[in-house]
Length: 169
Image 1 (cartoon, rainbow, N blue to C red):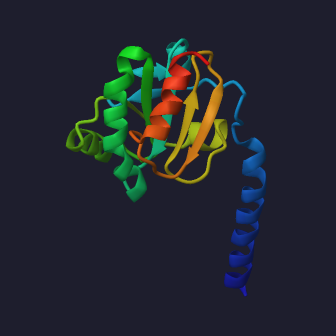
Image 2: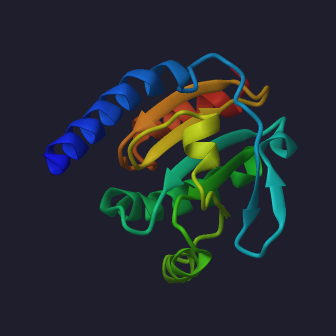
């Protein structure tokens, strides 16, 4: 009987969470909530410090296959558009920095990776669910795109969108 009650309670919590999270989720065409997280060297980094740049927030973890598949294209995208004002911020959802540091070294990631160890930004501030999830924030700090799942960030369609936001439109 206890087990059945436990299963029912967990199912109830999951359903309530799935109903509430969309209401809390960051919305397109609204200001991106500011946050401060530590990078892999322990330095504090705030989203607001990149105002005036186009920021691609990529929420990921080392245990997520689609997350790992898109890293090379994120590296290439950052390399190609960094000089035009694009900033890629990887936000790792892992419980410790060590596996993230190892993967960043393995993939030769040049963009900044931040640690959201307690998932405070992911769940509490942005109300997100699933991985990977990416947000494109324009130069004025407004969320313009939400991308669910892994994609090829170097595809012509995606590059066209990035160029559009880099031109300030």
